[in-house]
Length: 252
Image (cartoon, rainbow, N blue to C red):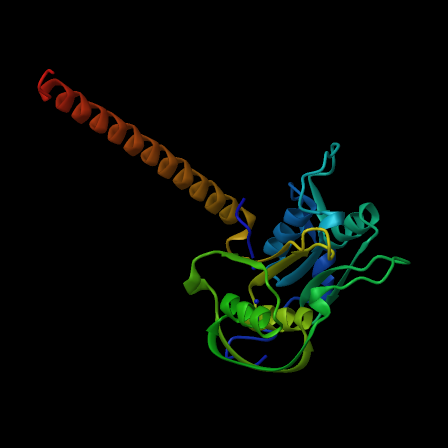
């Protein structure tokens, strides 16, 4: 499994192409796949940045059986339906960005790495997904880290972050780029401490990330096959050489 890991001042940045909340009520084609992937595809359809946090024990990355549904829906209906099925989560739309948060009601306090605060961080002319990596490093959060989409599509950003949580830093970076969706998954202490961050360029969407997974899987299979063939050839070479040496050895 590839672990991954997805990212306020920039020339192309805040508000450029931002949508109004009324766009959430416009008809869109119903996305498919896991709840997480449906939300990412929603952001792709709306061309809007978004941030998603996922608690590993309340996964939204695994596919769920779905009955027949409408061929079209609205973003608001889809997000409301998601929260109804996953009451530990909430969503909101603000500053031209969709936010999905893990916020269970009445649960025992737990450590959420996204609540960590960064005193200050200066980001200068960095690709947005790399800026997210800088946030993780500054907050001393060890996590798998990945991204999808050709790197030239990510904007180079310059911003100054002061007294900000990791979550809000990711949001600022996503809004600064204007076309980034980030997803962060974490598990509680003592249960694996799995932490993954992945950023998508919403021009590419989920499909490209799936293509990347398939390509890397094929590459691993090919590498394994070549390594096995090399070991087999080496075995026969050594065996043939030993047989020759045995035949040449003088009889006693």
